[in-house]
Length: 115
Length: 113
Image (cartoon, rainbow over all chains, first blue to last red; front, side, top):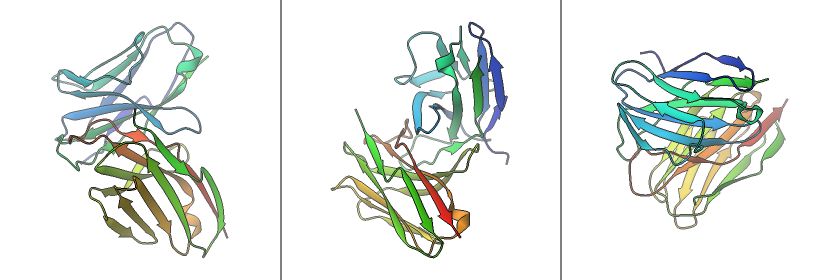
């Protein structure tokens, strides 16, 4: 059973371009979470999705950021018109359910560098 | 807003010594997680603590939870070099559900031979 797969592992974008980060959850997992990690910091929650639904996006910046988890295919975190401050590691986690005590498993992360 | 504070943020210790990392959080929660992260890598789950007084041990690491004090500890016994990593605690809001976690800033642990 493959773990949470994120791609690309590294992504370089020029200011103003779009970044698309992909996350394929573990088999059988229908809950996906995105986190952002700045250097020397802990992870900051961004958004929680289930298939075709955004459950909690309280950590998402109001502009330029969007996320989806379609019925088929991976979850996508999209950042439009990237700026230098978007440079960070973006981690995706998945879990099989939302029951109390359910553990979320993390992917390897995508390291975004905006130049 | 839930706040999670870890201390120390940086710890250098010698092999064979014991030490404790502390994790305080600001609001009621019934779920606390400890993760390990190696440089440039993802997070590895170490412990999930669900109830007051919970204690879990794996090898040289032991984690405990005191929900009344809003405190969790990660104790390292007879440290070895392989335990060098960054350790994060993460807390969920009460109310159930695998919702988003709030992470501490992490404790960078270096264990020297």
